[in-house]
Length: 148
Image: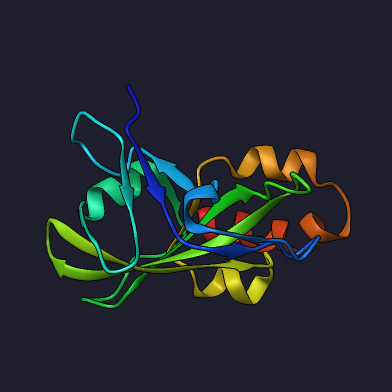
């Protein structure tokens, strides 16, 4: 059973400009923790998770170095226009079994954003299939390179 971490933070849609409030943001990740229940976290709150759980929840693009902040790219959908898009989730190292949720912000999936990230959603294949054309063609070669 997948346990979900819901990241409660306001986000802005890059497509329609709508601003979501924290409890309406559809930003979440499965398998990011082992505890037998789903949780909500807000910026500043502690998350019981370590590097192994990041590898279970996401596709690894590169290892974080030392105690640097972890940047994970996750999909979310706007509650107004329902368009799928990406958010960069930032988590700060506390100790080997804990990270603090620092922030999340909507980002365009560009080669620069991908190159700066450590992890990306395991649902990436769905996004590529449903976003044919220039947007995915720009990033697909980089993703293939990083994931191999």
